[in-house]
Image (tube, rainbow, N blue to C red; front, side, top):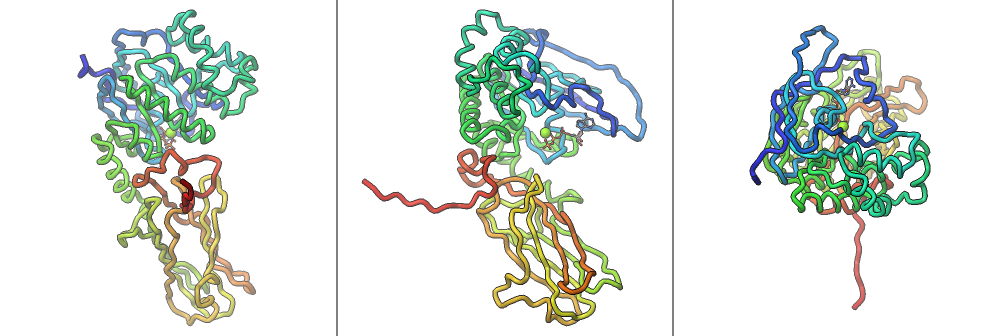
Length: 428
Ligand SMILES: Nc1ncnc2c1ncn2[C@@H]1O[C@H](COP(=O)(O)OP(=O)(O)OP(=O)(O)O)[C@@H](O)[C@H]1O
Ligand SMILES: [Mg+2]
């Protein structure tokens, strides 16, 4: 029965009311795993939901008419930009949240490890939670006891295993959650971005476990922005955009599509044009990001240089104009700052004539680790107050689908940049 679909999703939609947290579960950010209850055990589970028609303006669809099937033993990658609906899809599949329309059929025992979910009881100890989750998954007490040691060992939280989970750090919780999910022998493993949490050593352990699960014929659904990991792990992928499945196919094709659709969004074109005002002496007219082929882009490979074009206007010549540009990561840490004072031949702005001018600058390749960044620009003048600031004026994304460093060192959560370091071996 190798070709049998183990998951079948038909016409699935999820509607949220804007500004309203629909599900209590969704806000329980403290717990990370979610394990599913008995109906999933081994028989076909069919759900059909009533057609609640309430098309007021403040509703919005996080998922729109999603259809796909997953065969037994497949490792399906789900990719898409922030807000595309990936986590929502996994939550619906894991029954953390109800679909608004559509059907899901799942045959087999599911264990899910989600960004945000339920499953861990904060007042119970780590050990008790292993029992609780194991039981929810339909494991016998004997089965859980026999795997207990292995789970504790893998999690690396042995010291705290008899401490209530509410005292755990979020990293510890993820470790325990993943360890339970990976050892309780589910037929289907659903994983959302676990690699983003936990330290480097644990990330590698997780990848190893997922690879094992995949090669042992388990079915895995894997959401990640780590495209190198998706490439390494998955056999097939789907691409979500604004709640819709816009493509499905081989991992390579989906990664290519992912890169190209990102350029189409209004927010994500990699170019900003400003309308000049008459009373500002020094301001931006245009800011654009260009890839190594000279094309305007929003996402860049780790191995690619990013060209930035800054077009600006000087209305009145005054000394001491500067342009500062900083690159900020998602946690708002400044990765670096550069200014036209860094021009090889000395800075020019202070001496420029009233006109429109342009600077080109290049962010070197192999420095920024994969992730989202923003650029902030300040047009300043040391002596005059009319400084124009452009905070987070443009966003871009670094992706890595070209190197094999993806899960080795590029994504380490404990590093801020990921420079390519030259290593040389001398020995026998
Ligand atoms: N409980 C909720 N109530 C209202 N809107 C929600 C809720 N949960 C998610 N959304 C919205 O649904 C959309 C999809 O969110 P989702 O978390 O599925 O995206 P994602 O693809 O996982 O993004 P990311 O890559 O950032 O994790 C977003 O616009 C989000 O704001
Ligand atoms: Mg998500």
